[in-house]
Length: 285
Length: 173
Image (cartoon, rainbow over all chains, first blue to last red; front, side):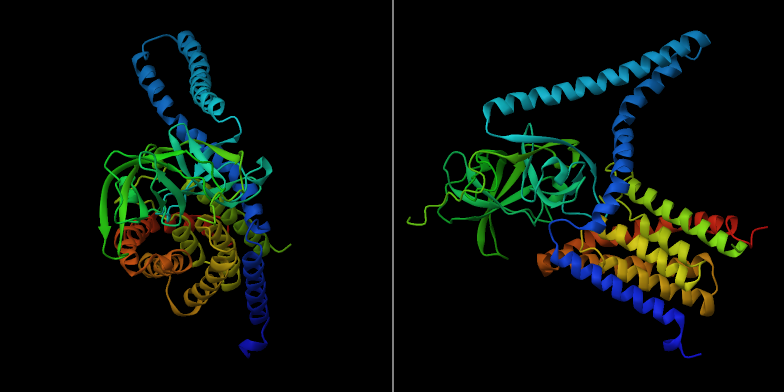
């Protein structure tokens, strides 16, 4: 039978057309997509559960050791200890969360105009080498694209993609990141834009530095806030060295973030702040 | 409902559940051990090992499900990997139905080829703008280790999905 007249060909053609339709729909609707939303609704609860289990593994390890030491104890005591373990795990969770919120309370007090959303890191793609990760909050929590993502140690990235219940964050290590930054000492500006070679070492770059710049090792880099997309004065990292890039024919500073991006488990997303959306560049100058 | 159709639907449900579970597990940072600084792509080897046993239309369906998960995982426009893996599933289904004998070796070769295609397309969709210098670094330090690591995982995936295929089909016993 002629293949082009068979049902199989019709099915194949139908699937290709539907898939092309989805691609076109996805290309037009870049903000949120129904298909990624459906997948997120199914996978985010699973990821949250597995992520919590993974985070608690360290605590469980401790209890297993304790269990070995108590092998000779009688059944009654074991049961009692088991109950106590559950209580202590809850205690550690609450304590950890409390410590986290205490830091943000201080941070919030010094930045009263900030509106935060607390989020947990629930995933990162295995093929992802640009230091991007997924958090468990999305548009339903008020998060939108380009919101700044921070921890108590400073800025870690920017929201790059939003679904209803999850969001993707491109970190300051990513070559896709373009974050306006200032040297806190000299007020010289540049763009924080990562490099694939430096991601494994938890380092990023501040590019487009003037050849007459006075940047020195140890200088602190923070957000400039000029674009109105991110709040200003969010700490990013400190300068390790200033070098010349032959490939791009410009100077750049290697910056060590204050946060170890790979180990981040909880973040806060700045959904609103005073001056959001206001361009602060004086075009007359 | 015919017994054959019943097992077909049952297997489809099992595979879909398997893909969603694997997707959730492979996303968790720190769960899969890093080798050379990379984590394996778990979904692709399990997808390939499933479709080598199945018919072409069934494989097409599995490719669509796996593809949309890969799209979400990689952050590409939804539908890109869905289309690619759907067509790859259909192609593998035909190859192993009519032309190639199913065994671990032949399936593993296909697995390496498909992993390379997926990595190549990921590079095209996401990172081609990084420049030639960076692309070389990325292939050397990221994609090649990922392909090797995921390729080794295929052995586990092959025997697991072969078990599922015979367990949930009329051919069992």
